[in-house]
Amino acid sequence: MEIGSLNWIGHASFLIRDLGKNIYIDPFMLNGVEDKADIIFITHPHFDHLNQDDLKKITTPDTTVIVPKSCAKEIKKGEVFPVEPNRDYGVDGIKFRTLPAYNIVSDRLDKHPVANGWVGYVLEISGTTIYHTGDTDFIPEMNGLEVDIALLPMSGTYTMDVNEAIDAAHAIKAGKFIPMHYKAVLGEENSKLAEQLFKKRVKNSLLLKEIIPAKYSFQ
Image (cartoon, rainbow, N blue to C red; front, side, top):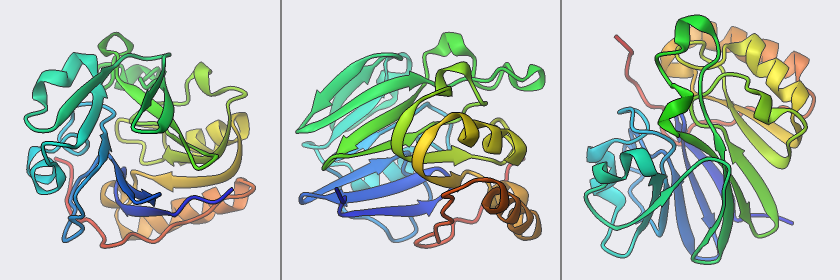
């Protein structure tokens, strides 16, 4: 079955439009994409995933903001819906489950510790399952996971690099694999190289164009 639309705003930020709802995941650097949100999914509290300025633009008092329990207090507006890893939930007709999102590579362990309870989401929307990993390495929980669309980071800064993302794609059973969380980190030239490698080695890969490319740099 088809969803209405899956739009890559940039970085790890997506807008899904379906059944008259605007559903955001990690809204950041919206740059003019300011449709008011019915539901917002937040994976963790880092500024490029939970950004107060961007949340203010799209959150109304009726917006449901789904957020890991450990950072629920950071949500200032809307109806807060705290979640924990490895649970099944439903809100406003949308079923979803949470998977843990964390680092296992030694030099990243302090970036996204498993103990923080940060998450990725598997959303079920109009019969289509979409897995947004959040910021994570290739973790055991991905092995054998079955979804229609998998959104995988591949920057290598705090997350999987392109080769690790390819390994994750080989472990996940998905109809489409879409890379994310890399352009602003890798730069234009390295991003193109990463895209070429990902597309070459991952069957059913799909490279999305950003609605409006976000421009910022990690320090």
